[in-house]
Amino acid sequence: MSAPVHLPPLRATPEWGALAAHQRALRDVTLRQLFATDPGRGTRLVAEGAGLYLDYSKNLVTDETLRLLQELARARGVLARRDAMFRGDRINRTEDRAVLHVALRAPRGTQISVDGRNIVPEVHEVLDRMAAFADRVRSGTWRGHSGKPLRNIVSIGIGGSDLGPVMAYEALRFYSRRDMRFRFVSNVDPADFVEATHDLDAAETLFIVCSKTFTTLETLANAHAAREWCLAALGGDAAAVAKHFVAISTNAAEVARFGIDTANMFGFWDWVGGRYSMDSAIGLSTMLAIGPDGFREMLAGFHAMDEHFRTAPAGGNLPLLMGLLAVWYNNFFGAQTVAVLPYSRYLKRFPAYLQQLTMESNGKQATLANEAVDVQTGPVYWGEPGTDGQHSFYQLIHQGTRLIPCDFIGFEQALTPLGGQHELLMANLLAQTEALASGRTADQLRAENTPDWLVPHRVCPGNRPTNTILAGRLTPGTLGALVALYEHSVFTQGAVWNINSFDQWGVELGKQLARKVTAELQARDEPELHHDSSTNALIRRYRAARRSGG
Ligand code: F6P
Image (cartoon, rainbow, N blue to C red; front, side, top):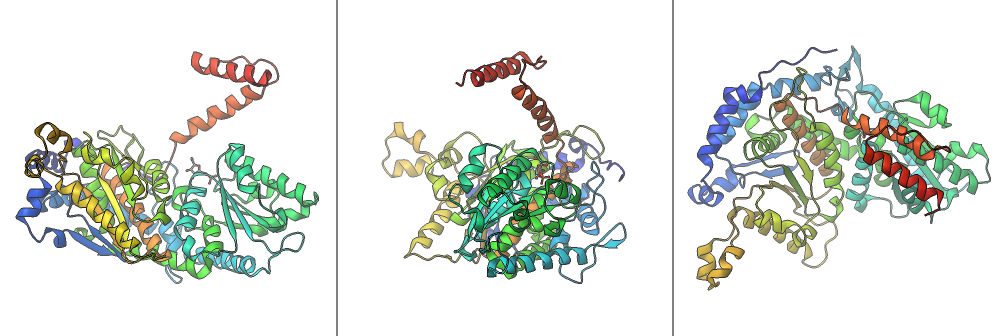
C-alpha cells in the first residue's frame, strides 16, 4: 500500500489564499473589458496539442490568474503525481493499484513496468488477438452455430463497460461497417435487452459480455438472458455459446463459470479503471465497427494527448489548463456544474460518457491523507449536442442566476456535408460563445428602441465563461485525443484536491442494499423488514401490487 499523501489543507495554503484574493479583485472585471483592453487576447490565450485547438480566452482569467493557478498546481505536486502515474506507481492507494490506462495506447516497443514487468507487450498481444478476431467476424470467416456470418453485434455491460463503447460507436458511426448492426444493452430493466434483440436473428448475432469484474448484477442478468435467448433460437445446443459469445474481463474464473470458453475471452488488467477502459478490450465492439486500423488510429490519438500532457510546458498544456480552469470556477466562483456542448451529432453520447469519467472519478470527500477534504470537489458534468441544447436549456446559461462554465466542441470539416449546413452549425457555436462572453447591455437595447420596461428582461449580462475546443474533423484519432484530454483534466483536478480519482467506493452501498431488497421483493413469505419506514412501506406496496397482479 502506498503511503498517505500528506498535503496541507487547501484553504490554509498561501496559493489558495492568493487565488481567493485575486478572485475578489477580479470581481468587477468583465470579459468585455478584458477583450477591449487586450486585442491579442483571442490569439494569445490559446493552446494546441494532439490535433486539438483550445481557445480559453473567453474565461474569467488574466495572466495573473493563470500564473496563480499554475502556482497552485506546483504546490499540490500535480506534475509529480502525473509522472508517478506514467511511471506505474500505485497511485490508486485505496485499491493499491497502479493507474495505467496510458499503457493501453503506448506504442509497441515502449517500456512501462508494473512490479518490475513490462506490460506493453501484453497490451499488444491482446490488441493483436482482438484484431485477428475482428477481421474474422468482419470478413465472415467466423461463423455462427448454424454456419451464418455474424452481422449483429450486441455488447452487454454497464458503466465503464458500456458508456465508452456506446459513445465511441455513435461518435465513429461514419467509419463503421454499415452492413452490420451494433446494439448495446446495459440496464437491468428487461426492456433494454428485449428492445435490443427483438428484431435480430440469433443465428447472425454475436454477444460481447463486457465486465471488468464479471460479477456485476446487471451485466450477468443480461448475459444470462442473452444465453437463454440465443440457445432457445438455435435449438438448445450449448455448443452454440462458443460461436456466439465472447467475454471481456479481468476475471477468467468467473468467465469460465458463466460458461464462456476462456479461449473466447479478451483480457485486461486491474490497473485499468472501468471508466478508463474504452481503449482496452472493452472497445472490441468499436474495433468490430471501425476495423483494427481505425481502432489503432484512435489509440494513436489517445497517445498523442498522453504525450502532450506528459511533456508540454504548463502554460500550453491543454489538460492541465482545462483542469485548473475547472478548479477556478468550482472553488472560487461556486460553480456547481460544467456543461459540455459538442457541435456534432455524432458526439451525442459524449456528455453521458463524461459523466462517469468525471463524476465517478472526482465525486470524493476524503483526501489521500485519509482526512476530510476542505473544499468542494468534482462538479456535475452534463450536456447535450448543439444546436439542440440551444433550444432547450441555454436560456438558463445566458440569463439564469447561476454561473455555468461551458466547453464548446466543434469541427472545421463536416463528415457528411449537406449544402451550407456545417457553416450554420459552426456559426451557432461561435455565436453562442460570443453571446455568452459579451452579452447584450441595457444601453444597446435602449439604442435599439427597446421599451424601458422590457430592458431588464432582454439584458444578457454576458461574462459567462467558455472554452472552445476545435479539431479538423471527427476521426478515430481526434476522438482518442478528446477523451484523453478530459481524462487528464479530471486527473489534474483530483491532484489539486488531493483525492483519489481512481476508486468508486460510494457505488458499493447501493449495490449491497439492492441485493438485500431483491431477496425481500422475491421472498414467498412476508419478510421481516428493517429499513426506514419509507423503504419498508414501498417494499410492502410493491409486493402487494405484484400479488394482486396490479
Ligand atoms: O458502477 C460501479 C462500477 O464498478 C463502475 O466503476 C464500472 O465501470 C461498472 O461498475 C461496471 O463494472 P464491471 O465492468 O466490473 O462490470
